[in-house]
Image (tube, rainbow, N blue to C red; front, side):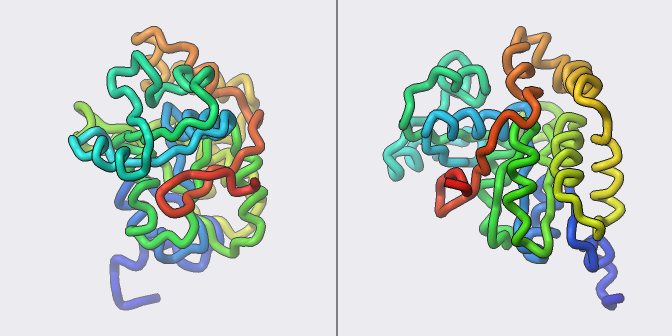
Length: 248
């Protein structure tokens, strides 16, 4: 074992690894062939729906005043932060104009994807419950994979990380679908948590804190889209500044 005590958190020696949020990404990304970002409610689900409509998605940090300048530089529109127009909400993208170019900021999944290269990722994908099997199959050529659950934030966009059950379940579905025997304890327990039947998984997403928050805001349609399990063959992959279908 390395003399560096921090190396014990690298999950070295395992093909499949798991971490939470920005710190997990920074710790694991430089050590693996690919990272998968999971943000089930809502970024990852929105990306899957957007790519299904041939929308070019640009991940970005949360709305901080620089997103419009960035959007202008890539000739794109910025998602509506209020959620009333085309926004981070999956339901807002179901009928969005095909072929549009969209900057999709969020403080969790999008920020992680935007920063994946700087964190040391050679290959960055975005996964959710809709495309878990497709994403896993696309990683057959990778010896090592880190699955990163974005989580949410306490007290708005800048608070400390809140581990989110829906992201744990999404990560677990992908880890289970990878079918590897060399899985770190952190990744293994995540896959065990997701080893439940589809009906129970859907119920858990609806009843967990994030699901209840969506329902409180009358956004059940976002949940319905997020728990539509393995309906997508899309593999959102970061290419330069944008997300494209890696299987195209």
